[in-house]
Length: 205
Image (cartoon, rainbow, N blue to C red; front, side, top):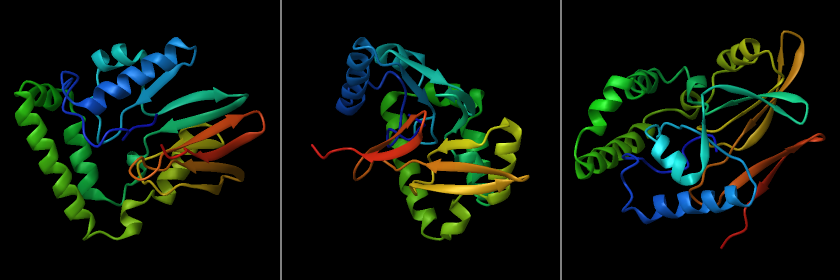
């Protein structure tokens, strides 16, 4: 999971939320059956911590991370750092990812944290109405630089929630960028093997 699995995350002590509990339990059962679980923070669930990871039997991934997927070095990112045209968001991201600010926030009562985050989500949705789709999408130069920095030809990220496979030519190299879908209407996953990657929609329950 490359972030934004949850609409918001008030802290690992938010164990009264039925969704939080059910997700952790489902991951734990999957891990017990032999599947390795990895979780990368998104902007909506940046406060997921080690207590949740232990309950879910998941390993937290650093953003960005390069992994070997069946012989192909692949860059995994949440994707929000690629949206460099959205200056206001990048300022907020720097503030929200600051460890001191996170510690100060988590020191507040849980009810206050929930209310604050719900207010931020409402503000975020309102702010999006005044931004163009281009501003909120990945910047082409930032994408190219991410490929260069990682030295890979495949990237997988979320955040923009515009699922697609993009082909980029970076310094003469053909590179592919997979964008994951969101979880609001219907979840999906990307399956990668030695032949490449294919996106699959999850069946409705």
